[in-house]
Structures are given as C-alpha cells and as structure tokens.
Length: 297
Ligand SMILES: Nc1ncnc2c1ncn2[C@@H]1O[C@H](COP(=O)(O)OP(=O)(O)OP(=O)(O)O)[C@@H](O)[C@H]1O
Ligand SMILES: [Mg+2]
Picture: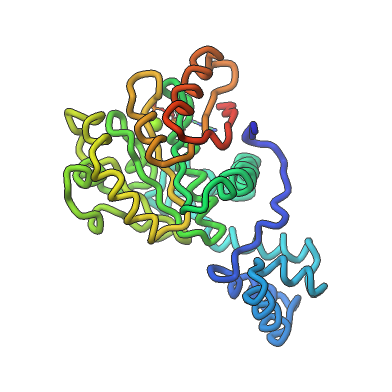
C-alpha cells in the first residue's frame, strides 16, 4: 500500500461508528432538514442492532444518499476546525487547521486504507508505530496529522511520542513536556502525563518527557508493555511516533511492542536500500508493516 499525501480519495463509508458519533451525524442532518427526529432514531436503532455505522445504516434504509453522508462528515470536520492564531497548535497540524485541504484529504485516504488493513490485522486494540529510516522524513508530521484525522472520526485517539531522542509532538500540540513517556517507563503512573487536546474532538497526547540518557534500555523495560496494555483499554487508536530507525534499535523495539507499523518514505530523498533494511528489521521482530506513506514535502 502506498498513499501519497494529496491524493484525492473519497472518504465514502467513513461515517462515525454509532457508539461514538452517530448521534452527532444525525443531529447535523436534522438541523439541515435532511432527516426527521423519527428517522434519526430509526437509523440509530438499526445501526446499533446490526453493528453498522450511522451513515451506512441510513443508506441501507434509503433515508440518506452518499451525498448526505459526505455533507454531514464535512460539517463535522468543520466543527473541530481550529482557527489559526487562536490556538497553541502548530500550523503544521494541517488536518486541524484546514480539513478541506488536499493534504488533509490524503491523510483521510491513508486513514481509510489503514482501517482496512490495520484494523483487520489484529483483534486487539489498534496500536501503530510510525517509522522511517532516516531523520526528517516526516514521521512526526504524519503521526500528528493522522492522529487528528482518526480523532475527527470519533475514535478515542492517543498519540504517544516515543522519540526519546528528538521529540517533537509537545511542540506540535503546544503542551508541556516536563513529564511524559520517559517518566512513565521509569515506573510512574500515566494519568498526569497524558494531555487531552481541547480543540480536537477526541485526541490525547503523551509527550516524550525529559530526555533520558538510556532510551533503548527504557523502551525495552516491561513497563512499556504494561503501559500499552493499560492504555489499550482506554483508547480505540494509539499512534506512536518513533526515532529514525536506521540510527538505533528504538523504532524496532517500539514496533515490536505495538505489533503494527506504517512506513514513511520521502519522495526523491529516501534511499531504497535503507528503506528495505528497515522493513526487514521490523518484520524480523514479528511486527506487521500494514502500510506505507510517500511524503512529498
Ligand atoms: N507531508 C508533509 N507535508 C508538509 N510538510 C511536511 C510533511 N511531512 C513533514 N513535513 C515537514 O518536514 C519537516 C520534518 O518533518 P518531521 O519533523 O515530521 O520529520 P521526522 O521524520 O519526524 O524528523 P526527526 O527525525 O527529526 O524526528 C517538518 O518541518 C515538517 O513540518
Ligand atoms: Mg520526528
């Protein structure tokens, strides 16, 4: 799978799961006069009964067209659009500032592909390491923006900055980095380290925290597995930012624990031999590489 950012791809079928956002989609469509209260309740009932997403159930009942669903989704993204200059969020979080941009569209296409390949890959909760061979290829950007588009779908999303060497998620989301994953891997409890991002629908971020002298050793400790087991109970989607895989074994260790990874490459920059090496190193740990992204920045 290769999902170049900026690809125009439909987000059909990506309506919210009924348990998270069905009511919200229903409310948007009622406000616009596209559904009556009675119809909305009927759709919710069928969605719950058959385990369908709200939009899917409404389409099966022939109460909504694909256009109606797209309309509701677009409105829903607008609700969580962040106004530039009035937020601590970095302008790089394009999926929040400009959800209608081609880049955000590309991220939603990636999200759709991951939902097919990654959600199907494991019965466990969804934990995905974002990896790449070399520095500056766009891992942190992809991890941050992908987390935003998952949260826009109503998934309870946690973004973990496990780059304990050059962390960046705290500055992208404008949060304090004094306590984070590094403290937690040393045995502290997680509650106070995880920041809920108020401007976004259901997104929390765990920053890396103070830079430890021994990242590889910390990441290899059993605390990491214990932490993942705990947060898998609380979140639907967990994305993990990692250091450059070619520089040390951190990314491999993280991917092994996550179980799944997405590989980021940078157009005209990433070198094939290094990418192949990362792929085989990650697969060797037993982790599954469920997708790749060609970043064009
Ligand atoms: N798809 C993209 N579109 C636009 N800009 C991007 C994209 N991906 C990355 N960038 C920009 O490229 C720069 C490097 O990206 P980023 O920090 O995500 O890379 P990284 O792989 O995490 O680097 P590091 O090795 O330092 O952790 C940043 O300024 C970021 O905003
Ligand atoms: Mg980074």
